[in-house]
Image 1: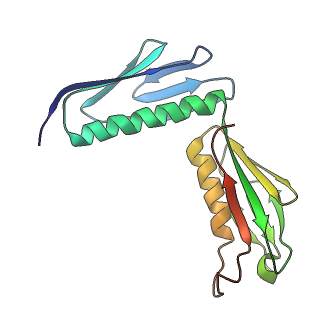
Image 2: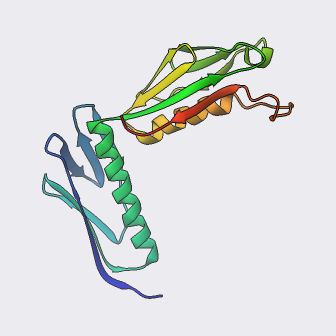
Image 3: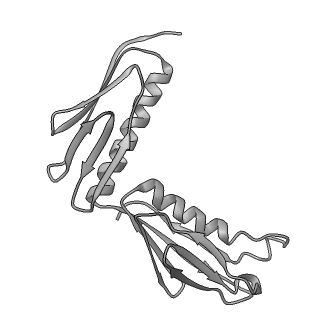
Length: 180
C-alpha cells in the first residue's frame, strides 16, 4: 500500500459563521442556529484561524484519506445547516383509504392508514420541525442527519405489510430534499 506524504484540506468559513474547536469538538454558529460535532482520529489534526478550518495528516494511507473526505463533507453540511438549513418535502399518497396526518409534540401521527384503527407513529428528532398542509408535508432543520432520519422515520412508519405493494401504494413519500 502506497502512502501519501501529506494531505491538507482547507474549508473556507463564510463571514456570518463563527467557528470554534475545543477538545476535538467543532462548533459552528450561524444565523439559523448552532451545531457541534466531535471529530477525533489519532493521525488527523484539525485547526482553525476563524476564517478557515484546516484538516491535515502526514503519512496518509487509504483510511485516513477517506476519513478526511468524510470530515470535509460533514463540515460543509454543518455550514449549510447553520446558514440556510435543510428542507425536505413529502407527500401523502392514498388510493384506498383517506390518510390523515398530524403532528403531536415530537411524534408524527398517521391515522386511517389502509383502514387501520390504531394510528401509526413516527418519531420527530430534536431540532426538526414538521409542518402538515393538506397532503404536503415539510420537514425543516439545521442538522442534515436529523432531518433525513426524521423523513426516513415517517416513510418507514407507512410501510405496507402483508399486502401486495404493487396494488397498495399508499403512504407518505419524500418528493424532494436538500437545502432551502
